[in-house]
Image (cartoon, rainbow, N blue to C red; front, side):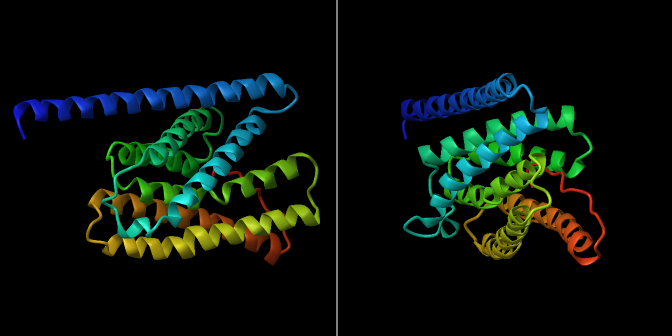
Length: 247
């Protein structure tokens, strides 16, 4: 490669990095403006209500687009060397902007949820790292979509309770469905993919560490869910609600 070609490649990398940061900033602003719009329109609803609407939208969009990345010609976890596509980059930018906005919201209005703060900080760091690697995007978006599939159920459960549908058969059905899906995706499927990622020689160590970290966090959420499940359905006592907005 000539000096001219090398310079052009370096310039291209700088341009891509600049565009990524600009796109992340735009994504964050869009999520923030959408939240403010919801606050202006839904004047009778609380801040948390409006923020959970954003969480529902983010979870639904991310799950729909991300899970599609799991069904490529071949499993993305066998090909971490695949270059990140524009659609994968778009999803990561969209999701990163959401998590930056939601992290700010949680720090201001919901500081009691330390696990959720840690989860959001991890999400911001992990998505930013994967976005600027320019490869393994299929793995990242597939994992992101899979983990977010239970989020709309969690938010629906909260909305039902907020609108006075607790207790009801429908509320209980949504709650149990959320718990089952969370366990199957985050724990059962998550264990399988962690093993694949750990023993896949093509994976970088940073990706393995990121995968192990979110797996540990998933278990921490699962422990909280299990305690709630045992308290409510096992001992007959009135439990505390599951407050974690983005579990």
